[in-house]
Length: 160
Image (cartoon, one colour):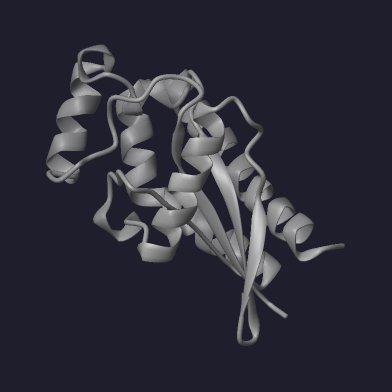
């Protein structure tokens, strides 16, 4: 399996685990429970999947909710390239780069309707959820999205 395919598998498996748990929280308890879940559990699930695959898997953004998820300069270039591809109607093409003994895979995170419950326009986010977001993330930059926008990227760091 190529590195780009392997990284894609790791990123999509992580997305699936997070998404399934997040959707369950939203459906059972609403958007406020989803905010609490993301705050307390998202890193745990991502770290667990990193351990399973023996790779470093992370989500980063140019507009992070959590400052720990701020994209670095290289990742910002990828985000900008992916946004350009999406805006021009092209399919976003994941890719890898190699640095020393590692291969880095880059994969888009594109918004869907579920994302908008916490990342959409502020006036449309559940009021209790938005209050909790402001409390937990006073520097939040992750709102105002609509469907099919680039929210960030998965970065998968694999050993060669």
